[in-house]
Image 1 (cartoon, rainbow, N blue to C red):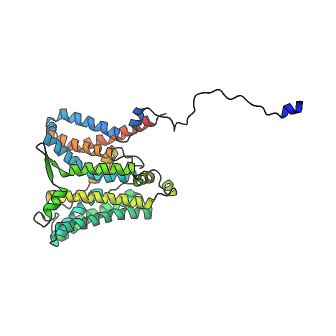
Image 2: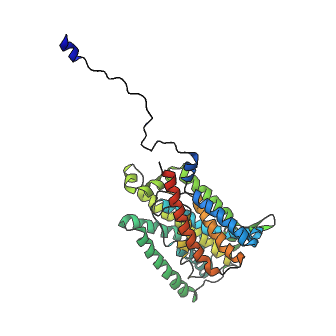
Image 3: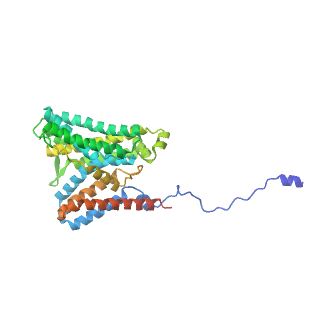
Length: 358
């Protein structure tokens, strides 16, 4: 009897119910913290602050035509900031984006003028050249394993020299000849550089393209498999490759998207001014990158949105024109941009820490 009793397993009473344990990953955060986790929230608040500031500091900003001009300046930056932001989410950045815009415009202008072709031929060849530059950047990156800083810095220097040297060789000047009287110019201008009236205010077509591209980029990031690939390769390309993400295709295609943006902005500049200065574009790549960073994209990749750079570009346009409307020395523009960039980085850092705090 005693042995049988010893063989019986001891059954412990069930533990008293206590508070549910969690490792922090399944905690449902309050709506305010979930909102702060969005990468575009910080720049939206910053954009609101900048608008309010210049509404009081520069009364001409309140005029409809002034707002249209601000939106135009923002759109020219914002169209390029969108593909640059997607590339940064994918873990890379492109230092050649600024001069690539000029390369595209020079190609279309000189090819059309020197060969007396319809300007649409120049536009198509410029598109091929821009996509080729992007593909070359991406191919060199994935084949060599070099950082995108070094690869695109080399492309930046090459394009800067080629822009000046070829333009001087072909035209004998540092600028291209006017193409305003050539076949196809009016149709191309209507697509890339026209305007329309809204309540008596002239609005540039680039504003519409900018917002349409932003909506498309947002849909791609949030609703498509390609958007998932972008976040995956930006977060950890080795892990992404292990689960079947085509890392090589994604990286190269992102650089080609930057080339596509450079082509579009280059065509806008060409058909807005009829001619192109070959030495322009230097330094613009930093403006595009800064707009993306201000918009919540991290240099380390894997984080960001397409809406954030829209607000970032708008802040650039507001500051650039707001200084002029306020009657201040425009030399302060770069200083304002530096303050905006540092402020945005600090705000984004605070927002992320607040949103992820357990």
